Length: 205
Image (cartoon, rainbow, N blue to C red):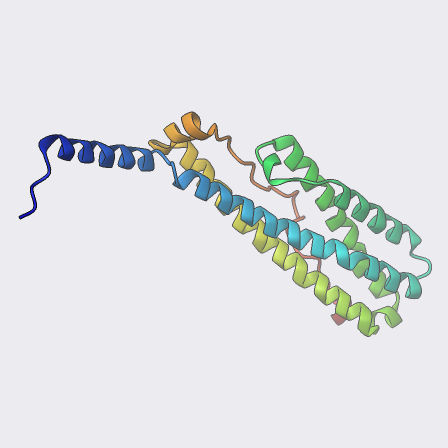
């Protein structure tokens, strides 16, 4: 018959279990999990902005061929794209409000410049009827919608992370173990979170 564990063994086991529970309740696992989730959501935002940037050169080329007098708009779009792709924001920068704002501003400038394509299409019926242009603008609209969704998901993940590191008992682990800092939500400029009204370019509205 197997012997029963000694009193000291039981005490040690209870202490280990309590210590494990204490660490878990202080965010040992939940804090990095929440942080990595927010970073993953940010990667989705960046991927959609890159997708948009990749569409711009073909759009510019298509418009240039049909609207030769619209160089001003094309220059603005090209310059805004160059700025948007030059300002980078890594996951480690998400706790720096100044860097997040610089990234937001660059992307918002491109959003504003891209709205000029709708006006151009109204001035050039041949461009509006161009299949390649319609395809590109449809892809742009879809991408803008994906950007809006990705930003929403990122902000929700940031809110969850920031709440966790500021509330007891996880705040103990956040300060003592990880030195966690709040992440910055993405608060785009007014109107920048709305997809361009590219439907007007097709429907003449």
